[in-house]
Every structure is written in C-alpha cells, then in structure tokens.
Length: 113
Length: 116
Image 1 (cartoon, each protein chain N blue to C red):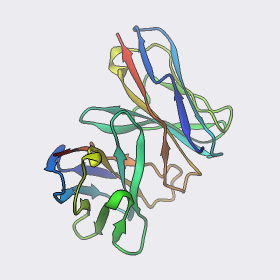
Image 2: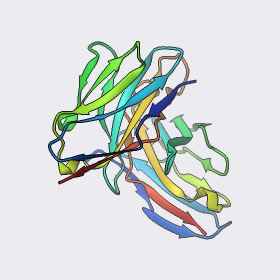
Image 3: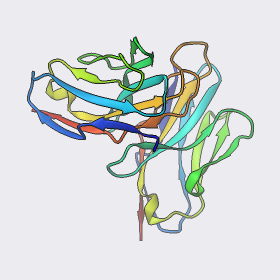
C-alpha cells in the first residue's frame, strides 16, 4: 500500500531533550516536506527537500533540523525542544517539485513540557 | 506572495442540507488551487484540485468547487451532506512560478460539523 508513515504518533517530552520524528514514504517520491498544524493557523511548512541531500527552509524553520540521506526517509529533528513547539506535525511527499498532489502522513502529536 | 483566506472557521449544518465552504486567495500570478479534508485524528487527503481547464471541478465524496478568477475564489460545495462529512477542510494555493518549491500555502481551515 502506498503510504507515508510517521513515528511516533504521540510524544510527550521535556524542554531541551533532543528528539527525532521519523518520516518514510514507499512511493519513490522525490519531494518531501514537514508541516506543523496549530489551531487557528492551519498548516505551515517547516522544511522541504527536493531530493536526496537537497533541503531548504520553509516558513517556520526555527528550532528544527532535517536531513535527507535516503530518498524514502526525511526525519525531523528538534535539538532542544521548547514548549512553543508543541504542535501536530505532518510529513508529506509528492513525485517531484512540479507535481502538486501531496500525500500526507497520519501526523505526530508532540507535547513539550 | 500567495495567501489563502477561509472565511468561516466553523460551519455547522444539518444532515442532508447543502453546504458551501468559502475560500479566497491572493496572488500576483496564475495559481493552482486545492481542497484537502482532514477527518478526526487523521492526516490530510486531497478532495479536489484545479490546475487548468473547466472552472467547475468535481472531487471525491460528491464535493465540487468552482474557480472564479475575477473574484479570486474557490468555494467548495456539496448539495447534501452526511454525518460522515464532519471534518476539517483546508483550501490551498500554489503559484505558477519557475521557482523550485511550488509550495502549497494553506488556509486556516474550516471545521464542518454535520448534525443529525
């Protein structure tokens, strides 16, 4: 089944404790991105990647890092999480930078205490 | 820069009633337009999209939307809703540019609640 998977689905952590949210897609998509969803703000792009080893900032990159060492994986790293990063995070992928239909993962709900 | 405004944050309706979810966009160039749906505790899935051609676009689950360039709108409609349509709906826009991102910009969402 074609899908985007994320782990963990739920995470409660404390300020400053490094964490990684994994994202994997099995569709051989070139383009992947991370969004955060906050009430009343909709979805905002954090980082995106157009291919292996090619990443760039989205609208709200502060406090986040990403890497793209393999085509299928695009982990989101929070080196020192803070309470304002409490949010619902979505990974998404699509074929390439031109194809516009994105496939979304199920989401990761992160709480930073 | 592109932007999207969803005019209603919440829309409550009764089952079998018609519904319209409103979306306006702002862009200095031509755009692609999308509606996504998010069911409770799930990710987003594409409902329908306008890329070019006919301005009336039909999507899944009986939804349709009409692109109106003069009014910069892309309203979503369904003639008769079901309880199962209860979800949050997001309008999104992407500009026709030669840039590298073709970024989707999302609206803030409209929560559609269908009551029996």
